[in-house]
Each structure stands twice: as structure tokens, then as C-alpha cells.
Amino acid sequence: MTMHERGSGRHVAGTAQAPDQPADWERTFRAVFDRAVAAGRAGCRTPNTMFDEADVRFLRAIGCSAQELFDFVDDFLSDGEPDFDTILAITRIRRDYFLDEMKGRPSNRVGSMDELPPKTAAVEGIEWLPRIIAKARLKLRGEMPPDLMFGCAGDRAFCRRVGMPVPQFLALVRNSGADDSRIIRAVKESARRQE
Image (tube, rainbow, N blue to C red; front, side, top):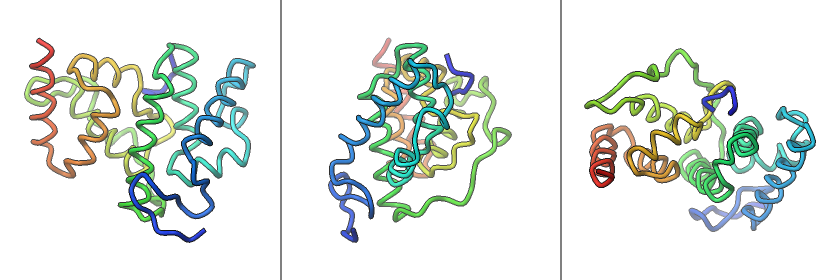
């Protein structure tokens, strides 16, 4: 387990591409992931050794940092999860938010570990929920500090417990904006269905 919690065309959500981004970005993303897995298995266990400059440029164009993909690959190699489809789904949500809401302009802010609710924080009796909401918002805005991972083992355990896959939770936070009550209601309903 990782030490982390860890052209000029217009963009239409999920269909077009950012400037300098391949039209079939998902195929390119798969190739970058596969090379990263091979590099990790060969002993390259840092973002700087796992990705080359072209990979980093491509990832930046879709709103993903080398650190974020490294964390996913590192957990995949160590824990067998998250699988590629889950990583792609999370990346797709972030990419669409980056291109649609942020107009392809990166945030100039990096979040701080100190601003996160503690792991034991709870809302309406649901432990971890305040923390994962804060992490999801940082992920959407591309403001993850290097020592934080959205979709880490703790997040995955939480999402299993409430019956909501990690990408679905990220989409819920995206669609809910600042409305925490909507997120809480949806999580409680999902958890109830697990009982």
C-alpha cells in the first residue's frame, strides 16, 4: 500500500480534446498507464522515473498530474486495486471538470494536508465522509497536495462500505457543487441499500 492516502477546437464534455491533446485520449492514457505499470514492475517507483516528459505533458493536458497517476499505479502494483477501468473513470470525471468548468486552465493553488478533516471526523454518524468530500473537491480542482491520494485504500474501503464506487462518489461531489446535504443524503441512501 502506498504511503499516500493515496488544435483549437471547442470542447464538448467527453467528446473533444484540449489543445495539443490526442482526440483518442483514452487510448493514450491506457498506453501511459501500461508503460507506468511495466516501469513500476521494473523498479521505477517514483513519478520522475515512471513517466517521461511526453507522458507528463499529456497528463497535464487532461488535468492529471504525474503524482496522481503514480499513486494509482503504485496502489495497483501493491494492492491489485484500483483497476484500470476505475482509474480511467476517475480521470474522465476530472478531465471533463478541468476542460468544462476550468476551461483547461490549471488552478494556481495546492491544497494543504492541514485543511483536511481528520480521518475520524464524521457527519451524521458517517466516519470518513467529511474527509473524502474535501479530497474529492481537491481532486476535481486539481489541487491535490503530493502527499494525498483520492481513491486511496481508505477511500476505497469507505466507498465499499456505503455501496458507492469511488468514481460514482466523485461524480456525486461534482454534481452537488457546494451542497453537502445532497452528498450526505445520497451516501446514506446508498448505505441503506447495503444493509
